[in-house]
Image 1 (cartoon, rainbow, N blue to C red):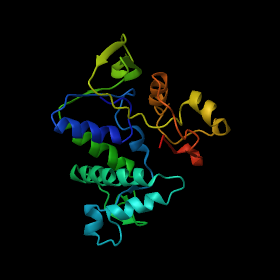
Image 2 (tube, one colour; image 1 turned 90 degrees about the vertical axis):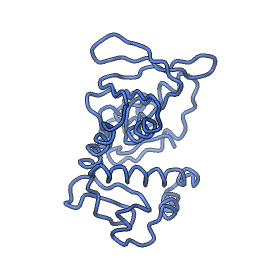
Image 3 (cartoon, one colour; image 1 turned 180 degrees about the vertical axis):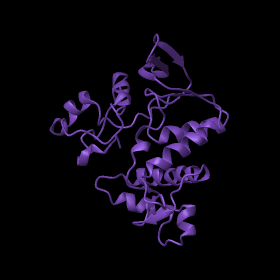
Length: 236
């Protein structure tokens, strides 16, 4: 089960559904997409079918992992884990109609007509999601992780219109993105940018951070924030 969304929730929900798992996807907003819809620059991945078709050089999955490792304070092992997922998600997008045929920089992919990639990314993911048997619930916000004997066993949900209810689950996946639209966490961790505004989705309020912390999770690198309009925030 996933709570709020970036792009990774969609891929995970699809992957688990294909594997025969029962998936409940909770989206606190009234539309799917999350920050994926707001991607205005490019999608980065290595070893893609488009790069192969365009005969790009030195753009393998391994090359991409090395490139990610050059970012300040990036864990090389995390980069190795991210690289294959980026490629797999990219291929899913292309298979479901996304135009990301223009390559440059060297790992960047963008629409051939110059449009913002988010206009291709979200529709393609939603199309793929509709092909699997996932229970998608819009306007249903996860508000609390349920814990028994030290194990997470589900979530408490608050629908936009209706009474709270509980979902019990064998596994709970938090895919809640960052906190750039969450005044509470901004004030706590990065007060210097509290009033800058954000290019992220309005739903990016750090729900997952807050829920996880309440059941004992340690939050790390919460000040690692890209200040340009606060366009990316994450726990790494």
